[in-house]
Length: 292
Image (cartoon, rainbow, N blue to C red):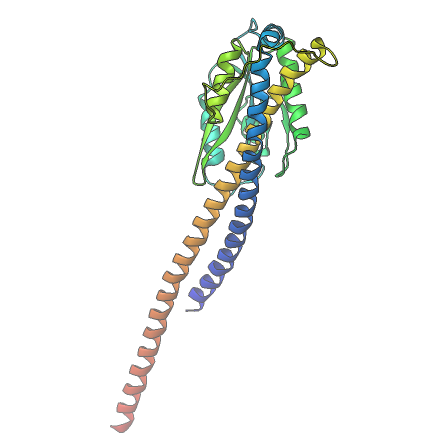
């Protein structure tokens, strides 16, 4: 009985911890989902701007981000978590990494991915850490490093592997190629599908456009900014997935703790009843012997 009481106390303490972690993760999940959704309109507006400037942008996109010679060399940005206790989120990412083919280099965003890549002998180019409240400035150096490798022809493609947020209980690893942009229209269509936008609602503007400070400077900065914005929203999506997975995992742990406490309490009551019955039987037997 003493052992059962000790186990009940330990399970109750663990259940309180997992319940608190569940509430924290639920709060962070709500904030992450709100941040991911709040940037959707801005991204769609940026796509409309790209559509309007398409006649001017296509050539610049091809110059900066067109097809490279060494297509077999892949650079993959992996968004994982820094901590565990988030179910199979990281495990599913690692399975996708293990299934990758070709000469791959990795930029790990998150300690879990960095450890896995290093432990399995894969090429780790760099490791970054981002906060729960991701800012655009945290994503900028990650993209600039990747684009630098691409422009120097050290890699032929840049891809992003991250846990895409489907709903609160479902997150799936998704691998998205962001460079090269061999067809700007198709690239924008793929992004519109991802953001659930109407493919037929493509903006055009036949008016003559005056550029400030200059067309050349704008054409140099806008494509790179567009790539950074896309990766930034993938990072927001990954954070929403992380907090959702952790909330679900902690809820499952809390429910299991309650079930285990109920089973242990029943076992304790049975043991206590058995002990009481045994004591009563011994007292009755002792009384009978004394009367004889």
